[in-house]
Structure formats: C-alpha cells, structure tokens
Amino acid sequence: MPSRHVSVPPLVIQRLPRYLACVQQLQANGAEWISSRLLAEQLGLTSSTVRQDFTHLDFRGTSRRGYAITELRDKLELILGVDRRWNVVVAGAGNLGRALILHEDFARRGFRIRAVFDIDPGKIGGRVGELEILPLADLAVTVGQLDCQIGILAVPANAAQEVADRMVDAGLSGLLNLALAHITAPPHVAVIDSRIIASLFELTHLISTRGDG
Amino acid sequence: MPSRHVSVPPLVIQRLPRYLACVQQLQANGAEWISSRLLAEQLGLTSSTVRQDFTHLDFRGTSRRGYAITELRDKLELILGVDRRWNVVVAGAGNLGRALILHEDFARRGFRIRAVFDIDPGKIGGRVGELEILPLADLAVTVGQLDCQIGILAVPANAAQEVADRMVDAGLSGLLNLALAHITAPPHVAVIDSRIIASLFELTHLISTRGDG
DNA sequence: TAGATTGTTAATCGATTAACAATC
DNA sequence: TAGATTGTTAATCGATTAACAATC
Image (cartoon, rainbow over all chains, first blue to last red; front, side, top):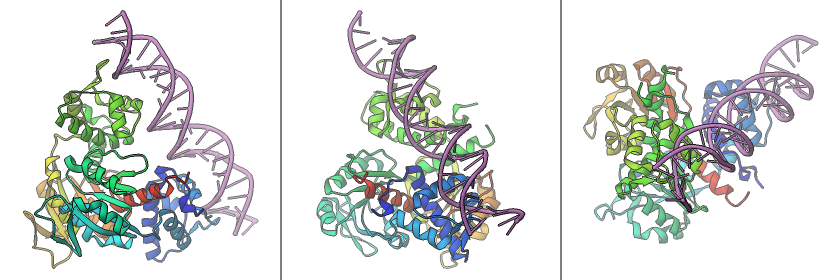
C-alpha cells in the first residue's frame, strides 16, 4: 500500500499543503536543505510539531543538515496525491464558479474542471472558458460519462443542500462546499467546507481579541 | 466588555459560523427551538460538544426544549461581530479577486470591499463593479484614507509575501490569504489562510482513505 | 408527574511540546 | 572532534466525550 493511502490525522493533513507551498518556494530559491527549526519558524509552529508531522511521510532527515528539499517535496506530493488526476464538476456559474473555472492553478495541481452546471435558464448554453454551462438536470449523466469524483458547490446558501443531494445521487465521492450553509451527506461521501466568509469571521475575531486578553 | 471580546478557543470559533448558517436555515423554516442533539446531528458533532461550545455564548438553554432559535442566532451574530462593519481591500484583480468583489454576500455580512489593487499596468484604471483598479503603490494611502482594517490576498503564490509585507506596512490589522503560498506577518497582524486548493487536497485524502482503514 | 434536555464535572482522547540519546 | 539536528519517548496541554444531577 503506497504511503499516501495511510490515514494521517486531519490536523496534520491540513498542515501538509502549507509545508509543500513553503518547500516549493525554498526550492525555487535554490535551497537544498531545510531544518525542522527553520521550517517551523516560517510556518509559526514548533520544531517538534514539524518532526512529528514528518513521521507520517515515510522518509528520514539527516543529522546536522535537516531534510533534503527535493526528497521532502516528492514525499509531500506523494501523500497529497498531487500526481493523480481528479475530474471535477462545479455547480453554480456565478462569479465564484466562473473564477474557479478560469483559475489555472487547479489544472496545474491535478484538478480538472470538466463541467459546470446552473439552474438559471438564462445562463444555460452560455460559456465559461471552454465549458458550456449545462442544466443541473444533466448532472448525473455528465458525472458518469466524464468519470468525475469531486463536486464543488458554488451556489447560494439556500440551494446548497439540494444541489449537494443531487451530487450525492450522481455518484460523486467528495464535495467541496463553498456556500455559507451547512450541508449533510451520507458517510460514504466526504465533505470539506472552505468558506471565505467563515474565514473572515475567524479573522475579525482574532483582530478583536488581539491585545484584549 | 461585550462577550464578543472574550477569547474563544480557535476550534470553537471555526464552528460558530457553521452553527449560525444552520440556525439561520432553521429560522427560515419557521423553527423556534433546537436541541443540542438535533444541532449536533445536523453538523456531525456530539451534543456534548454543542453544549460545551455554547458555554462561550453567554446565554442559556431551556430544559426539555433546548435553545430558542432567535436568541441563539443573536448571540452567535454578536460573538462573530456580524453587526460590525469592516473595510476591506483586495490585492489582485484576477478572476478570484473580481469574483470576491462582485460577490454580494460580503457586503451583507458587514465586509465592505472598498478598493482593489493590481500590479499589472494593463489592468490599472479598469473597473471591477463600481471600483477602479488602483496601482499597488497607492495601497498605503488608500488604506489610511478609507480606514481599512482587512486585506485579502488574491495574488499569485510568488507575489503573496511581497504584497503581504506592503499590506502590513500600510497598517492593516488582518490578512486573509487566498494564495497557495505561506506568508509571514508580525505578531500584531492576524493572518488566516483560506485556500481552496489546500481544501481540495484534504478532500482527496479523505476520499483515498475511505474504506482503506 | 414523568421524561427530556440542559449545564457542568470528570474521564478520555488526541495533539503539541519538551527533553534527550543517537547520529553525522 | 564538537556541535547541530534528527527521531522518539514521555510529559503536558487542550479538546472531546461521557455521565449525571438539576430543571422545567
């Protein structure tokens, strides 16, 4: 079993993309080695946390030098599955949905957006980049035909649950919820929330409490 | 001191917007009371966690009935600071930046996007909605004039740190980083990462490990 | 009343940090 | 060699869960 299939604690998984971003920058700057202390400093962690996290990575550092950046990057990419290709559908051809589709970063990371859906008849048939906006009724057929695994919810909050249900029925394995609404899904479907407004609330709470406590 | 100034554990803060989204939906459906058990079921938590979280909210439930939805909503909005108004600047007038500016949800939640900046001379002077795209060189002056507190980084990964530095120098109190890059800021500036691609990696890891363990 | 649900305390669980022998 | 850094163990810390008396 490849190491990327081993279950890693969720909080560690959340840090891995941050390590990867940092390591890619270091590599671009020509660095060859990085210590747990320096990496921790960059990311606001302790060196202990970094070393503990890397025990999930199936590779070892070197005394006195730290971690070989090329190897570290390879291992991070392996466990994050950067080498694999995922087919993605987007529900919602509003501003956010369009932005995602036109964002080149997704394709570069292995996430290919294969179709976009909307419920507004005025939008259906229109284009976003190379994609034609399809009616939501076509979701199940399209997911099957294009072998899609992931659905991104970029719809208004009051439509989120209904669209999520349709995505589950269509056979998607994972949903990324960008709507500021809670959605439920059966246990075999993974759901991750990534809501910018929720993040803004976290931020304002931090700002408000800085210096108070 | 209003309760919203009391420091709440970060993991609780992350759940509060989810409670709020859920409670708003319940209220829209005409519900008046909600129990910790039902709320937990909706959000995939335990009822103990819900009750523990609500101890930070400075209000009490009622035996046999649960929590009064109107009051719960008020308290959640108070602690999240939904009543306050924040002035926001966006760096990066690409697809993501434009989508944020055109997204009505922000203004409705009290986040007013007051200015947008880019470094590309071809974009400067162009418009996004009602805003004119300004040169990044104007950042500090604009932040001061418009009394902005929050900066959103919607720039490419390789520009993120430089723009973050400029935002810190301009006097912003908090940064929301949407770029897939790590940024550092001095301790008096709060930083929250909300990176859709990092969320997608979390999601694919969940999908890959489902049924393996 | 009987029974459901709260708030709170204590127990459990997991994550982070500290410490240090092993290593190069 | 001397000293920096690892991997790992043990200690600490914090978050979640369980349990239950109090309450309506």
